[in-house]
Image: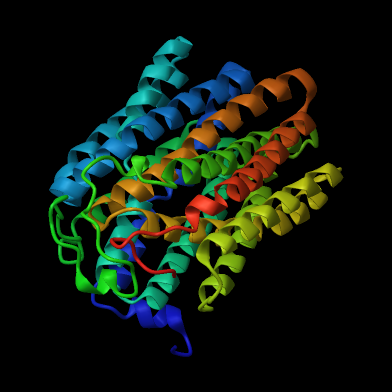
Length: 417
């Protein structure tokens, strides 16, 4: 193992470039949701309305993104995602214009659905490029950890930028910047054809390296990745984690407003992601020998313990500290979850499998933001944080329930990373 494993993988041809482009391409992942909440709440005066519109956007993405991912696996990233990018841009900009003009809520739902359904998952596509570029399990673990750290950096920068723009410039500025920066990053990412993974049909042979140390080979499956043993339970774990994310976003904005400092909500949310990013970098720099499924369950339980600290929140400073500590469990859980997908699905299903867990996270975000919005309108911001705690503990319980199934692998799966 080199002294700096991250530099080792980033020195691979084209790796640093596609990874950087992927960072900007998925910046909307952390900006669109909170920007929509801030914009709609400011223009329509209701957190519940804002939560519903945001939920429609995320649910649309959750339902359609796996189907887009299957097309990507079959036809290639650029061929599928270029028209999707145009559609996403039109839908989200249309949402901003409609909200400013005071359109009926159902119009916002339609435009949010268009913008969400066409987004795809650039994080999944970036990880698929790593899987193609890095055959060794240990280095792939490092590459996935690097991508998870970028995910968290997105969540450090995105909410802060979105909040500052929405509260300091104009209500729709955060959404507009997310569309512009994300669109440019996506175009840059898709233009890099050299590192785009080749299309694999379901009948293609499994590479010898992927079978090393595995049981006797079985025929690669041809159905959806979500039907693979262990994948439904893994997806449910990510739904619970998403409930935690979505509710914490809305509850933090509401709590900051109650404290008379709404503009600081983004900084507080950044502490959540900062704790996760630092933990992810440390976790990814080490090659672990314990079973991957066991590590996944342990980090999910640690995450649940961390979010329980929301019971202690009394002011913004305490909230920031609690979010930093709670965030430490996020990235390791995400790293392990994405690696489990690699172990559960066949190579030609990888983009779809990664997208399923990503969109399951999105479903949880939408449910969490909606539930938190309803509870906050009824009982204040602390009621929203109870939704966050419920999501964290659901994530831990589901991970423990799934442990026996997630421990099993098949011959076409990658080794533990």
